[in-house]
Amino acid sequence: MVRSLTASAIKIFEHVANYSTFYTLFVKTNLFPSFQNNICKILKDLHLQDFVDISYNSKINRNFLASYRAYATTLGLIMEWVNGGFKYSSTYMAEQLIEILNSCQVNETYEVTII
Image 1 (tube, rainbow, N blue to C red):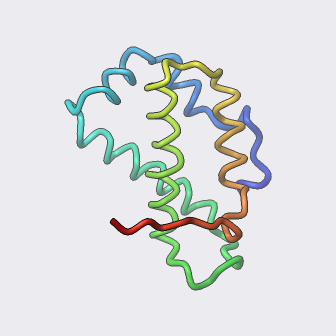
Image 2 (cartoon, rainbow, N blue to C red; image 1 turned 90 degrees about the horizontal axis):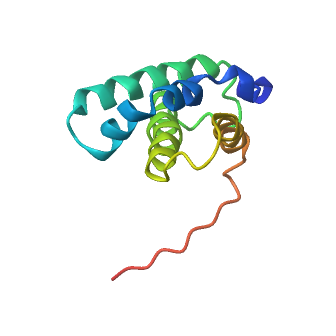
């Protein structure tokens, strides 16, 4: 379960840091579009494994939520980290991912501007 995760248990950011040259190429060019899709599928599957107890909102489709978290959160964080020049440590990034996944998004408010 995400709530019991520790930063040391999340290895994706260590992997990205260890292969930073490859991930910089991966993020800054579009040479490997199928690779991005494969990474997101793996991340989605990992999120689905965590959804054993999805009682917080049964109206949400599990697959949609897993896809959202895989693409928006995990891959988004990796891309932001790479584009920022790996400014933060892999441990810090793992801690941020845990905080984001554990945060309650129910009380978020967005202002929509229609042009």
